[in-house]
Amino acid sequence: MNSLFYLFFEYLNNNKISAINKLAFAPFASSFIMSFSDINKFVLREEPTNNKLQEIINKHTYEDDHHWKWFLEDIKNLNYDKNMKFSSTLQFLWNENCYAGRKLVNEIYRNSFQATPIIKNYHHRSS
Image 1: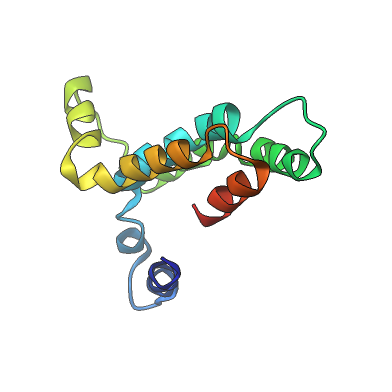
Image 2: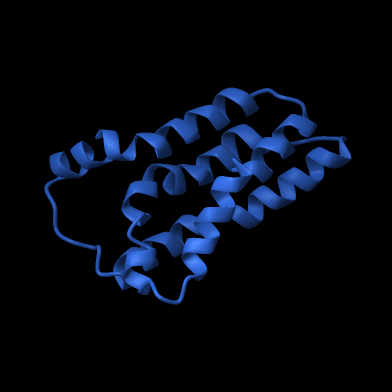
């Protein structure tokens, strides 16, 4: 998995590729990005807590809670904000091309729900 991240960031840092092409993955990452706030609120955050690591996780979940708003701004700035029928939007989000983002969300839920803080921290850091 780490080599995949390395390749991804190497691709993003490549000056020969235009910004619009670098970010062409954005619509396909929608499921993950838009679900991350819920993962923070309903899976990773646990309040009240006396566990120091869980306190750190909780703090981080509040910091990450609103990144989806930036994503919506990015979508507008990339001119991906097209009018689309609601049924077409759902069809896009649940097609095979968006499977990886949906799978990632479900894997985080599955592996982090009611997990110990050390496991939650691992899954939060690796996503």
